[in-house]
Image 1 (cartoon, rainbow, N blue to C red):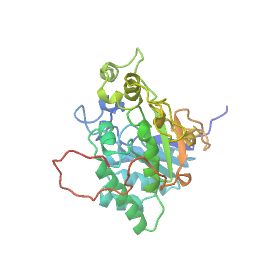
Image 2 (cartoon, rainbow, N blue to C red):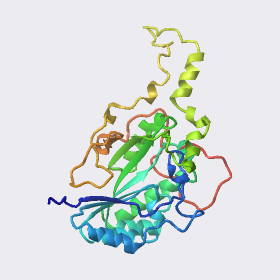
Image 3 (cartoon, rainbow, N blue to C red):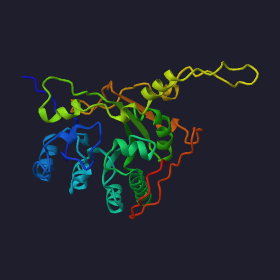
Image 4 (spheres, rainbow, N blue to C red):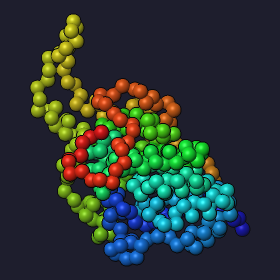
Length: 319
């Protein structure tokens, strides 16, 4: 009888709940953790037992729908697996990474940290990632980079992850430039891949499907096309002055650069070998090919705002 080899790649969800309520994420409809039940944290003993059972494991990804850094023993899990020679990676919204945890993160055996940021401006980011604060995330990112420098380590490697949708597509070029300024080594972009339209959808997930269209759904190309259809076209461009160019495409600025062609990326499920498998829903970009000094249509700041615990009553302004 032929026995299949154990996988060399494994993904575990150490936390089944999240501190944010991102618009596109179904975890807000899950019934794991408070107020529905006890904390949805994987016991460390169960984690260690699972890791020990996969003798051929060489890559462990600690992430599911929940925020991994909510687990009080998250870095103990990282150290346990890394101590066995396993490459450990994770995704995080980076909202819980204070200075003390940044030092712990830099000193741990974490190989790569994928940081989830879905907007180049505070307004877009905080509209999508409900309960988060853009300035705080940038402060935490800078604290991690500083902790890495103090430890004289290049780990964890930093990569940006963005979920692209109509309301943030127009900010994608600016987000690439910001990622380069933030020292990201790469960037992954994925589209929304689930519309919750199946007939077997559990009842507690149906509000995501049944919700009426929201104003933010028209914040990008659709609204621009609607405006363009009601405006008269400008006169044709003059060969002498170049002025008066007709508006031929209201959404031209939202088109992705040629560099965003999909390419194979690592699979996010258990695989019997260490070879990467293609993913049709993700595009990757290697940051060394991006220039942080590329001109943009509006001033951008790659540096985070000064960290402060004081809250302001003034309305947020776009960075």
